[in-house]
Length: 232
Ligand code: URA
Image (cartoon, rainbow, N blue to C red; front, side):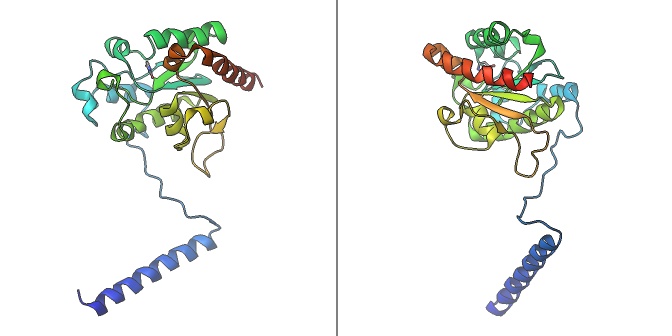
């Protein structure tokens, strides 16, 4: 393409963008929004979503997993707990939070909140175990994200307790660390979609509490805020 044609094409592009922005402004939009991509799972219910996840090969973790750990609990729960990824026990049993960290989470729910574990819904950012419990990789999080987003859309909890930095950063779309995020409610979802959005309470991951028992006090403060919110 010669320079004259290139320039003509460029000017046409600029005119098209200007026209689009003008049209949006006339329609009352004051900020540009990214087009919403329809989730591949938008029509699936929880059972269908689980069945789909059981055969998932979207990322490399399918090659090393023993089971897909989709999530457990009450499909109408007011509260969801979201962790990072299954560990060895969870990978064996197909259920989230059943190992040592899971026992601590169960105690927080049953002894602390005085609720049966079966009344809440528990899931993870990743549905398959990263080998050797390494951190989730960005591509794995991205591939698995539609499952979690659909779980949240179907369950419609009032509160989501984000356990640790991976869950908190994904749900709040931030890179801020868990120490700065914890203890403060923030709405889930992007700007403009906040009506009836679940509130996210970021707190420390139970596995961190096993290594740092002193941080249990802060988690208990966060959980008390959650209980007060649910009692409102
Ligand atoms: N840690 C997690 O984040 N999830 C589990 O299911 C177990 C341990």
